[in-house]
Length: 128
Image (tube, rainbow, N blue to C red; front, top):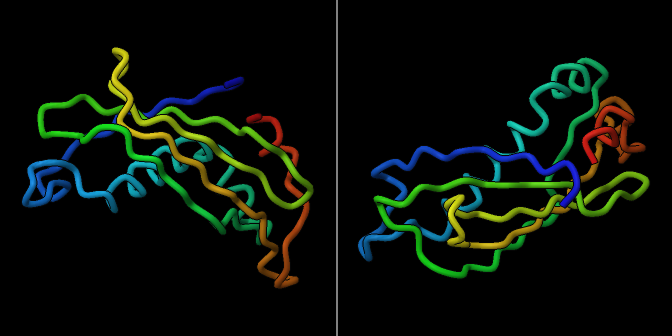
């Protein structure tokens, strides 16, 4: 878990379903918040160059439910670096030993001008 980045998540009433726990789909919003936090310093530079970082695969293993009074943190790190893609792994937890879920997204760097995948930029590699 080299270069792990953590993001605290503010739970909202709308995150919860009739069962009183966070709906499974909202976990992906939590992952998105963590990705935005991780890439916030490079998004503007890459967007100006016409390079987007897009999700091409997302998976989540749910361990225990998140309930309204839980503290939620998403920790993420780059676990694999390819030529045009990389994997981000995440742990959704409470910072005190409780693990709610483990997840992974595969990201592709996409050149919007050329309309095709492009090499992972050095600014992204430096986050690994």
